[in-house]
Amino acid sequence: MAKNIYNFKIDDIDGNPIDLSEFKGSPILLINTASKCGFTGQYQNLANLFLEYKDKGLIIIATPSDSFNQEFSDQEEIKEFCLVNYQTKFLITELIKVIGEDAHPIYQWIKEDYKKSPKWNFYKFLFNTKGELVDGWSSMTKPDSEKIISKIEKLI
Image (cartoon, rainbow, N blue to C red; front, side, top):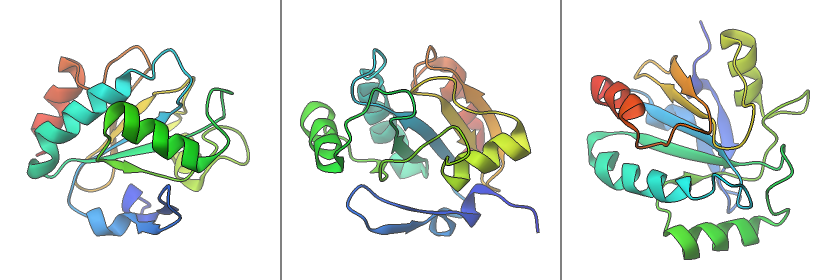
């Protein structure tokens, strides 16, 4: 059986396990985030996107990472930053690595199977309802840009 994003597990920011198989059949937008990055304002775009598409089945998962040295080291600080500044309601995971040998298995899989990996914070990866990578975008592309929304619309 080919691997897809639904084969992975990750803990949320509170340490509760998330089995991505729970989202089987839903498109997933996966973003590596950082609280102290020039692109951090994209949390607001993600919050808007979540409000627009949550009832249509889109799952948004933010993976805080200090792989580019721009994230708090304390998960409570990350959580407070996201909630206070952006009222985030989408899933936020534990602090993970997104590049290198000790990257989280999801990001290792994306690199191995799709030859893609984040070059900076706020890289976005969109998976279809079969859990396959559809596309990826750099930090420069806002989560609620027409490029991304048009792909989401085709999946829901």
